[in-house]
Image 1 (tube, helix red, strand yellow):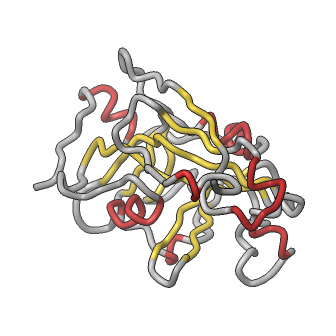
Image 2 (cartoon, helix red, strand yellow; image 1 turned 90 degrees about the vertical axis):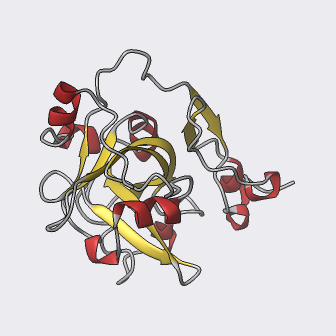
Length: 213
């Protein structure tokens, strides 16, 4: 059983038609990571129903000087999208099984991106499908590495503005990022943002956050 839209009709129509604009993406990853909370990530596959979730957890990755960011390796086959124009999807595989969805931002050649770590289902996602983690979230939305490099301002996978709903404004909590203990001083940067009101944020253990316990 798939979740029918939890949005009222006017908000649902806007979610499936409106897109975040160029100005939204043309900012530092640290700004975009926070601004993405509450926005909608929508996938309208060629076949089947549209799927959408409200973004509730993100992490900022800020270019080659950020030792937790893939951009530290410079321009390679893997990072080509990361170093490309803002407003593109950067999708990569970790642990040989989990696909991670990122939003390229700031400017071409900057290497900035925001990892979307979790979302709250609002439409078209099975009620039993978990979305509390980057791999679970992409699986629920049907996002794969085939989406790497696509323009999120057009097409079937896109970001829509936060719906104007009463009581829907996120309560932002900020922590160090997850799984980046190798990054030295950058492991402790407070660049993870989450909506503390959502039950769908990921729950990493203390040793996974920042430099670890």
